[in-house]
Image (cartoon, rainbow, N blue to C red; front, side, top):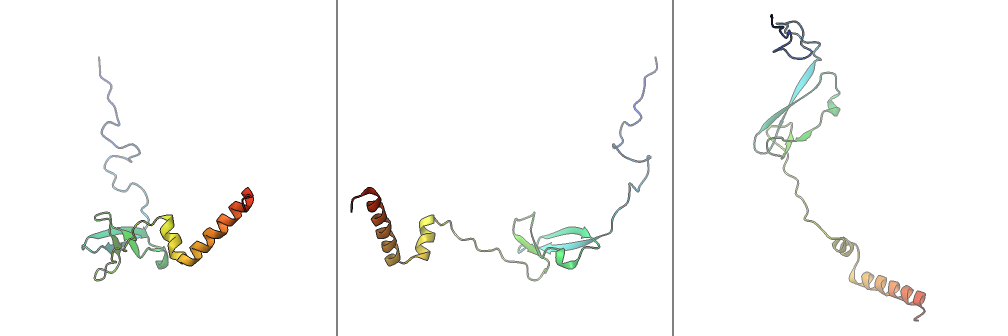
Amino acid sequence: MATGGNAIRGTRVGAGPMGEQDHGFHAERVAVSYWDALGNETVRYFAAGIPEEEIPDTIDSPHSGLPAGRDKENPPALAKTEPYKTHLAYVKERRTEEEAEQLLDDALQQLRERRGQD
């Protein structure tokens, strides 16, 4: 009994004839280097015909998570993050103590009028 062989064993699905080096058309592209504050370089590839203004000036470095820019000598600094603020903290930034007391008095007055207590 002869054993049947599998003709595609060991080849990639969609591969061309064995030994073929060119597996289709490769579009022209440009390599753009980005550097983070630690000196890590990341290369991103973009289509050769893309306008310069569509190539981002900064990316997030996959090595460090820091922002990375195109200028090796002046990488972008990490943006300072503000601590979490509560709703009350934001309200206090917009209102003075006197305004807050006036608003509270107005709201209490309206509530009393609705309940018929004034």
